[in-house]
Length: 283
Length: 258
Image (tube, rainbow over all chains, first blue to last red; front, side, top):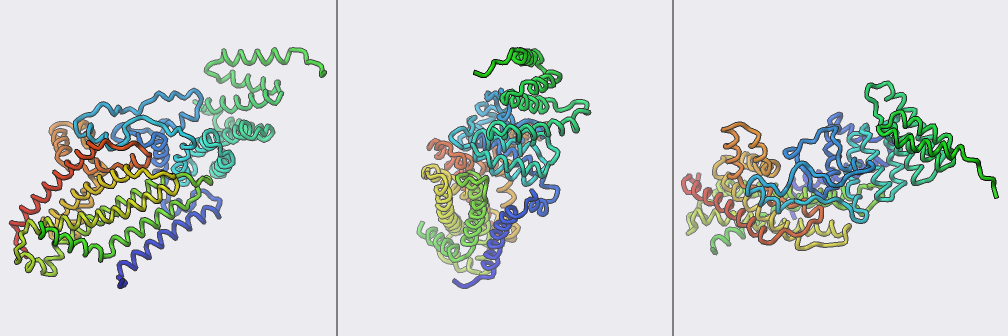
């Protein structure tokens, strides 16, 4: 084969692309500063792509069955199902604002045979791992997007049983967002529920509360959900550890911000009753 | 038919000799390999992102090959003045164009076969399964879609003066249809009259290349498309390719060769 200048140039380009990609990987491994390469390449514009990539993960969660911007515009503050799944009492009977069985014309009806047309989730054994590359990329693009770390950690920890990876990712998030009470809460939950490391979980959760008070308490509409979740985790932790007085103190704080104070009151009364009950002498 | 076939063989041989395919294939392999080497939470079984990247590269490469190779066919024959002795023989202008179309379409089909085989290997290396029928459907639909692209690029190479302008226009049109084609009706519904009717009308007129893009089904391991639907899609593409070819023949007959 005679050497063609265009071929040589294209091959050089291909090698450069591959080498660049490899260097990117190596650089990530060496440098601990998150998002540094993409920051240099894309500047601040990378943040604009981060939400798109995060939504891509949500689209993967739904196996490609996902509305386009023409179907249902997604507001940046709108919760994706990936996020909803991390919350308790998540209702899976949702739709995407578009019904694929209602077609506007024959062409649309014909076209639905060539794209995913049924609401499904990634639910098989470990299938949720397929969303991880996009979450990883979203974190690279916008390291200040706290939700990416908490959601990824939830999926790694709860659905994929990759606790070490979840912890490492949360620590990466914490380096990029040292004041994030959400990441600290997720880290504390990991120590409490997965590692059963009570002292460590207590320190992290108390730090989360401290950060929340510093950032949110003075706001007109503070993030009470995170506050309640963190206090609830801390209270449950103390209760399991036998520190009923500490648990009671946390429940009293939850009572002050709870949308359902009656339930919390009941829990408080139960704990008071336990505390009042005479201690059984050791056998 | 023999004349058309002979012309097509020349085009295929020329495309085999050219380096376009090899370069694009090497690029696809290198970029897919690089994407596959990224360590994602120490999990080596994540595959769908890799399938998506590989299929995207295959689609881009196939469009580049189909458009650039087709766009230069007639201008090259004119430039090298080989078109005059060719048409002096008992070869009609219609046969000449059909031969060029068939050659380009077969050449990109051969390239697609290699690309999809590579895709199958990438996918099987991590998924431990090989849904051959699904891949065949995807490759077939991809190929018939490229038939439409080749036909309208051929028409463009007669209408537009330079292969570069034709190539650019064909790229923009193909990319536009692939990205926005299926949403034109939704956009039209939000417009006032007469723009609504105009846009909705154009929605029905344009060839919906995006119908043939079944990457999402392949990436997420969906079931096979009903074969009847594949057949209808093939007829749909054949109708558009025939319309573009007839238009190309009609224009070519009325144009002076030089």
